[in-house]
Amino acid sequence: MRRAFVIDFLHTDSTGAVHVYDLDERRRVASLPTRYAPEIAPAADGSLVVADFHGEVYSQDSEIRLYDRELRLSRTFTVGPRTRYNVRPSVALMAVTADGRDLVLVLIDTVGNDLAHNHVAALDLARGTLRAKRIKLAENAFAFGLLDGGPRFFVAEQGRELAGLGWGDPLRSSKLDAFHELIDTRGRGWLGAMAAAAATPDGKKVAMVSREARLAVADLPSRKFANPPLAVPSGMVVSLAHLALGGGRLFVGLASRESASLGRSQAIHVFAWPSLRKLHEIVPRDPASQLALTDGGRSLALLSDAARSLALFDAATGKQSLALDDVAAAPVWMAFTSSRR
Image (cartoon, rainbow, N blue to C red; front, top):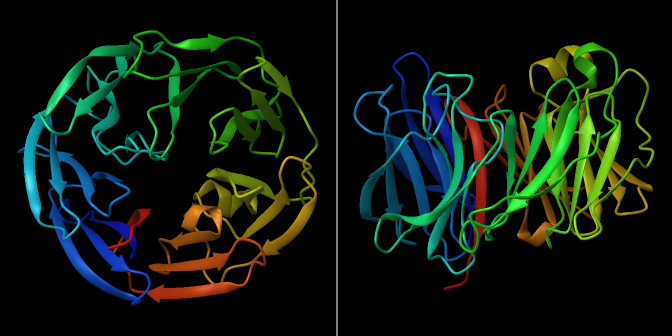
């Protein structure tokens, strides 16, 4: 059973939903109502964790809801603030561990404050309580990667340039393992900012890329950075958070400056990893607002907010394998899980 979870958010009345699709049957099997645009974390067995606002939209607290693999509500409990600005982040900030026992998540102690105190913590899903160990993040740290099915996360300390990288596991330590070195993603103006980052499935390497496709690869065991060249067409820039790494391939979402500023990719360039040899190019029918790997890295999923569509492509060949239209009234995020009955 392969499932896609699509977050729907209607700005007009500040309500949302999580639509669940069976990808093998190519149909919607459930819609879970939410109070706002939630965060979601599918588990390996097909169950789902939803983080939504508790009570009023701008409440300081979040409600965690657990749905079993049949999508029946099994448990609800409340934790502290989850997002700084009460909007959907451009990266995943929570994930269920591989054993399904804990939810690793980012906690924001102060909502609406640029100097909010951020922590990464683990929530015991059986008891509904936060574990004692927490890892405090620097005020300028940006949590950009929680590994799906694993407790390890990655953060980047950034100002105008990226100046450090850290990683940790709140289940085993209350400290952040980190090293600092200027990562060469510098460019001209806003193009010099880090646009996207992705970690290898084993968590040993992190790839980061700037808007103008300057690539930095961090090897965590050796604490070394490399800046291998990445060949992209002239006039194309990297769209925000449009990077995926897995299955021996690196996927980079590219677009014109205008389209990239809207967070959309017009083409996905696929490179062999780690050689960075160009393999092929995926040009979707609809501009992609999010890309993600699924099926163990064998499929690339593209979500289009403009066309309200979801498409799957074979990662090895670039051929489209599935297309779903009208997946949500206003799709903003997607996630996947696969399980066997």
